[in-house]
Image 1 (cartoon, helix red, strand yellow):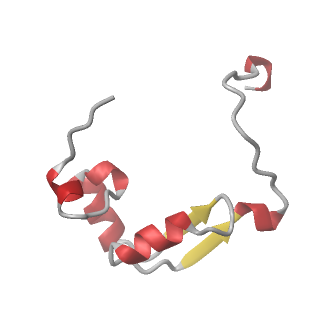
Image 2 (cartoon, rainbow, N blue to C red):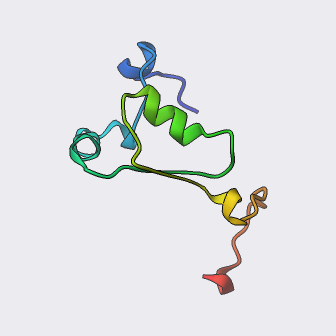
Amino acid sequence: MNSKKSSSEKKGGIRIGGYISGMVASAKAGKHLVGIDGYPVSCTKKTMEHAGFSLTDYVVVTALGFEKKAYSGSIDKEAL
């Protein structure tokens, strides 16, 4: 595991879009920014707002009836 921190992490910055400048610029220029969270802890929403982004739409998928389950470490290739 790499223990080195990027300069943004050392400064307490948040990495949006892998901190790829083009992705960040696209998000800033967009008219609509959708946040999708897996459950009500709202990590995505909080991260985006902390980074200065305003979400135009926001969804918590568990509120739509999806169940969050622990990853078993294997993929059912038949389901793909």
